[in-house]
Length: 499
Ligand code: HEM
Image (tube, rainbow, N blue to C red; front, side, top):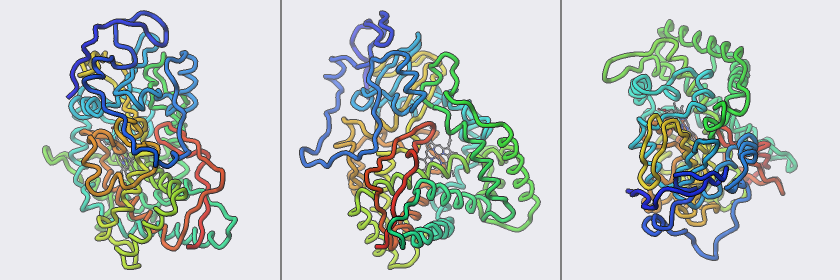
């Protein structure tokens, strides 16, 4: 456990230059001598870092620079110090934003202090208009009962029921790629391909397939409704004067239409006596094990929208970044193919194979370390809180868990910018603190769809690489753009070649 910084309060504010009665951006020398973790390195044999990276802001910086950076790319506003220090304070206009990187501090916020550090106002403002007060956005008792009711439908053993639909949709994409592979000059956008594949999978899983759903209209409304949301920044927006997300929010028309479409689907399903094993049926039947409470149409619709929004883009991005890394590491692609052949005997991936595809899973894990689909977890203190080793966090202060920086932290990972799936094999994960790896968050608000996403990512990747090579477009390095999710810009052009 971290203990309090023994340095007396005092110093100057790094941004405004005004005297302050707080510790500065860095922990002091005495604190360091007691707690500092060593920089980890594997020595001179290390490969060069993966080129797609973000250039972080260096503090101190002017207010104008900080604002410009957040508006341009919130990921770049995670200060450079966050990649090597246990925490960073960013004082700004009389308020402080905290970036917490030390695993003990992360635990203190996400697990031990989960009641006192709630989802930030900025993140709520970005999401509530689109998905209502569903499990992703609700707080307090409203969140607790929904989470209790929904948890059973996402249990790992129940997720395996969806492996056949995952394989079928991945096969459809692989067939498109096989056709492309006959033309050595053809280029595909893997980011878009993965987005379409996971959207199809989520529709199949939620509604037993798109029967009766106008898929293009549905997809267009989701995109329009989320346009501004995905463009909103979860970063220290609440530290800024008006506390608003940087970009304007998406239109209310598509959102209203989308909600009407989803509520109509829910009503139709309640009236349909035919038994179905999809997530919509599980959602309608979900009940709080403590009170027996079930959801009304509106709550069911809000959670359906949540699963569509929270579920398909994040998994698509995990796959997209894994493919990017594989274009740079053909030897890893080969290892995946060999593993898939050995486990499946050359047939389609089945539910019973998933746990044995350990290297494929390690590639997904490593891709989500280097490029976490949700790169920042924002919180806000609901009261004054004393954090060990850091001091006072005032009520209302934005607290950022910079997942991207933590997962590349020099004191938590050796050669952090290098691709190495073996970090996730065998006993290796046990040698790291639990809170050093957080692609799905942690504590009571940990991603409810984690098992679904992991099974889906493994099944899709294992299926896609059959008989195919993925290869980079020479000289192309995607830019990292993070709003709520971490996307490659302008997409991920790549070649697919026959093996
Ligand atoms: C690779 C894919 C995914 C990633 C990286 C991811 C990441 C995350 C993260 C980091 C959180 C915690 C946010 C916070 O604490 O503020 C979260 C929460 C959540 N995720 Fe995911 N997610 C993924 C897939 C999914 C899927 C497939 C679903 C549903 C089908 C889903 C549904 C949710 C929901 C409902 C929450 C809110 C849980 C709560 O607050 O109780 N996610 N996710």
